[in-house]
Amino acid sequence: MFTRLLVGLDESPRADQAFEQALLLAQRFQATVIAAYARESGGPDGAPMLERARLRALERGVAAEVKLGHGAADVFLAEVATQSDAVLVGRRGARTGQDAIGPTVASLIRIAERVVIVCGATPSPMQAVAIAYDGRETSRRALDLAARFASIVGSTIHVIHANPDREAGVGVVGEAEASLSLLRVAFVTHVEKGKPAEVVARVIAETKCDALFAGAHMQRQEGRPSQVTISHAEEILRHTDIPVAIQP
Image (cartoon, rainbow, N blue to C red; front, top):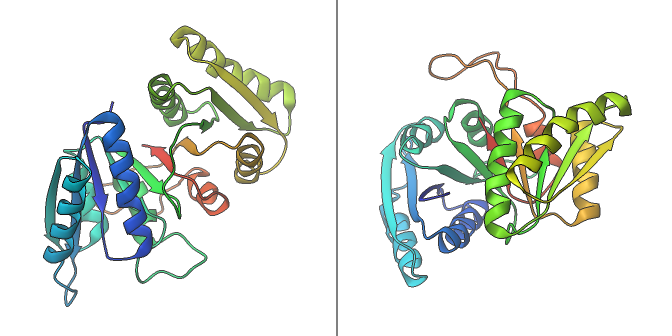
């Protein structure tokens, strides 16, 4: 499922935890980890940090590569990610305040053409899988990704949907139920009233899920998008502290 995992590093604690999360996934899937750093104008030389990361991976029996670039980290990571299956990042970088996801992460979600796994404060086994499902195209792709992941780790998928109209909500998750039944993946559905991010956070707390999959819905433009419409993915990130795999 994952053969090449890209990790964005910047010497922040959250980036270090993202690297640890990548190592855990790489060991499970026997994947190669690519440690990447973009040096902005006047920024520190990232070569020593990348070499330390490479050696750390090798000590864990994980194949590793390094990528050193220049310029904006979001653009660099999005470019390198085209040769990977997923890109892992911390929620916040070295220069980001404590109460927000970092601007690099927010932009990467918009422009990357691969799954972006936004990691938590501590590495997760990613053994208990949840999906924030709303029936849209990227949500259906995220469901497929979650199903493949759950089939490998042997997990039951918790399908979470927020809808003030329960009957309408049951209809939406019915599509997910049909797909998961065909794939022969065990699942439980949760249809609840409330704001999507809050419903997702509440169900995750109740079910003890330690991995979340979600779709990112956007109007894509060339280069850095402006006036992009994102789904509830970013708001969900503010309400959870587990790895969130965002499917473009």
